[in-house]
Amino acid sequence: MPEFPTPETFSFSPSFQELAIDRTIVERDLGYRKGPPPEIVRQLIDEILPEVPLRLAIQCGFRILPPDLFSLTESGIECGDVHISTGPIIASQLKKSTTAALFVSTAGPLLEQWSHQLMAEADMMKGYLVDAIGSEVADRASEWLEKRIAERVTPRGWTITNRYCPGYCDWPVTDQQKLFSFFPPDFCGISLTPSSLMIPIKSLSGIIGLGPNVKRGAFQCSICELKDCFRRVDESELAAEQR
Amino acid sequence: MNEILESLQRCVERGKVNIKSPYPPDMKGQDGTDELARKALEAGIAPQDILSKALIVGMQKVGVRFRNKEIFVPDVLMAAKAMAAAMEHLKPFFKSDELKHKGTIVIGTVLGDLHDIGKKLVSMVIEGSGWEVVDLGTDVSPDKFLKAVDEHPGCVVGLSALLTTTMVNMEATVQHIKSKHPAVKVIIGGAPVTEEFAAKIGADYYSPDPQGAVEFLNTRCTPN
Ligand code: B12
Image (cartoon, rainbow over all chains, first blue to last red; front, side, top):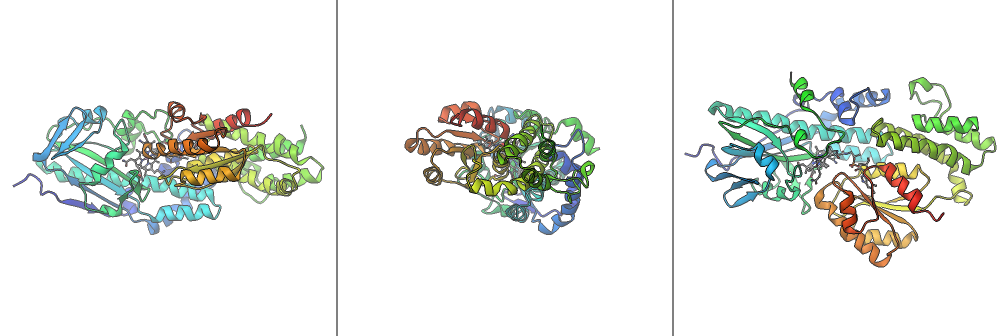
């Protein structure tokens, strides 16, 4: 009997409430960390947030790779005859993993359409705020999924690493083609274009290492080279939020 | 400087559109760019002065503050809206040729890429600096860029991309344009783009932010 029933995939549709996105989080995403945004921005966010659940199609899912086919290399992972080159930085974060979960998450296409519609009607501000909320939804959906993955492996005494995405730290965006090859077509409603762009745009893909001895390790932002990214979250902020 | 022009500049900076607008709260009940542009024209101030001594100056301050991360995208959007309200009053003067744009920039997100907002933002700031912007949208093929350059002789081209995989399509676009119009200047931007990459693909300039693009346009792409 394999340790995990594979090649099974798991998918979920969490509600917006479960992602716990509030105005403060959106404000931070917009860059306002040191001071509040203009009042009008606050009002608009308050106006938009209740409408968001009506325009969401959150989906997320993962697959745990069969441990007997899984191995770690200096610069990535191997599963059967597929080599995924995460690059040395992410490979070192996956150290000691017995296997890994590959995952995707998406806010779905509706928020994006709403944002485009608003901008086409010349309401750039509201369109931009909806767009930013869409990004946060995709992000939080993968965070939510990470907890489901943890729940699945803790009964056997395993822990999980942080999540890491293709396109960060020398892991080529094109490797998403390999990552998606482990999922059924149109998994969670996400498709990948030849230029490795996920459609819907508000989607994320990535990997989480699993095993009895893995460490949670560095959060993606702290190993990312975009040092002055306006969305950078430092670990103290993250810890404060999780408290 | 003229009082009306000074107020007009401040309204652009602060994003004050008109007297009815409750934003910003400390300017409630005061004239916005809409009223002030009209009053400036009524007072006989030359449209060129309204544009270059008030609107462009206000927008430039916004561009600089955004680059310095003192303000963020929503603040820029508000300033652009205030700028646009004033520009409505200047439109007739552009039509009659009394007012001229500094030049034209054809801008778009390259083939394979659907990201729009960064490019839109750059467009607004460039427009606010007195340039005409022709926005071709997203997923724009090299052919479509070339056709637009044909239609706008003497224009500058701006390319945007948000992923390393679509950024490579900038190279083909630059080559395609320059093979027919070697003198056309191309400026590129977007999160994964770097100065080295710009040099490698033969683009003329890279800027991480809208203001850098404005400065390049004003210093390196105008006849005088
Ligand atoms: C929010 C965000 C997301 C959101 C949504 C993104 C969206 N566009 O809708 C979510 C969370 C869904 C996401 C997903 C992904 N993302 Co992302 N994301 C970002 C982030 C943090 C901000 C992007 C943003 O909204 N910027 C705001 C707008 C206004 O800025 P902008 O478009 O960059 O434009 C500005 C400048 O670039 C410049 N500019 C733009 N165009 C032009 C043109 C000219 C001529 C000039 C002069 C200037 C200029 O001026 C603009 C205003 O300042 C960036 C990192 C960053 N700080 O940029 C990563 C980033 C873009 N993402 C990245 C990656 C890798 C991904 C994923 C592939 C990860 C994954 N495997 O899941 C996916 C891809 C999604 C897909 N559909 O395929 C990489 C891309 C680099 C690369 N390797 O290709 C970045 C750069 C992060 C990084 N650390 O490397 N992402």
